Image (cartoon, rainbow, N blue to C red; front, side, top):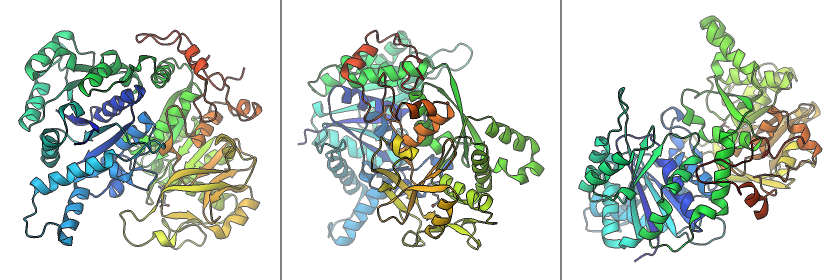
Length: 609
Ligand code: GLN
């Protein structure tokens, strides 16, 4: 018998109603009660991992420290719980089957017919038990609670073996006080009356029960707060107490979700149900900071416009972590983020002939932005547009951050226009280029696609004492960030680049790989080969992103003249932690219903004053 506690989160009615955010919020609430929390996300697809997905279909591929390419929901857990997950924290049908088939080949099941029940279902249970115990918050302590989120919705054929695995798990292996089932459902408000409808919830709960799992909590997603009478109805028809029905209506930011759940008493319920003996989260420092974040977010007055020049701009999820990192930094400099998605191809000359209005609109958005971000990407489409955006930023002294492909585009642009190397390119995009300024890393070009890139956490050493990125990183000698690429800046040309003002101030430990680029004489023109967005946190924004936002809001000068320090008044960044006294001062006037008495301006860590 294991004493690990499990919270299984399933979804009903439709996908995409914020199950991941609700599951992360439950974890965050438990964490704020002083409990060590980990999480597992189950994706019932046959792919081994998310590495080969198209961002169009599934959104961004999230990368972990260990190089695991996983579902973007793991990003939510890392951000909400401030933990570091491992590739095994993402289970897919593919991984489970691969594991069972490998065992079958080894002869582990000799003489037996290998079947979904019990072999696949056993493998799921063993996997969950094993991974739940892996420490995730750097102190090497075993977690106490594991949040397990089951992807998809109840009734999906792909999810069946997992549901059956948990039915057995909770029936035979885990004691009643050690697990809890949360079902996230939808309460639609159709038509002109806007009446809240409970039928879809009733049906999905019935389906869940039919499969042998009973919900302890029913979390209803709704446009407006679920009325008490509607809660009572759900309680009656779904066979739970009214206090087991929670309402999560549309709110101003995701920071509000843990607060909404706490207000409705979720922590008290979980403490009792899971027999956890911990203080309530109300006065907890972590929760108070979170509350402060939510209030600050709602009170922002000034706006900053950032142009995101990408390729998958139709689907917001394709740049989920990039957008989150921009939001974290914007909040830190007390500005509301006004994000403009620009389809890179629309900036290209061909578009002028094909669709002049799209072309002009894209350029209008680009030139009116306060800062420009070119994110990572693969393949040729849109790269010329990204190169044009880098050129605009470089020549007009507009703040620019290039991430991965965004760095490579800035290098190509510089080679073509500052060094006059006509046709300079990346060999990924033009294998026959005369000036291969970006080339493949031979050991990562194996011809296979899955899991063959330079992936995960790697060290970057600074070779310059005064550069802005080093200062933003708190003057550290080295940084560790997550990578996902196959190509790199050609080391052969680095000397020429540097002589002309494009400096590679951060490099891999062996000095071979160019990791951080800064342009001399520009207010902020930075490129990074890694993806700093993956480890950005609401209270610890990613330094290169923070630099972009500081420059785009005109606060860079103040930051420099303050000796590269944030105002001690309220800073969420590492090394600038506010003391407990400062925090309690800030949150003194908070009540669960109202925002803080401090205005967004007052609480900015970067005010010029
Ligand atoms: N396609 C480029 C490479 O493989 C950039 C990758 C990225 O932006 N993640 O190096």
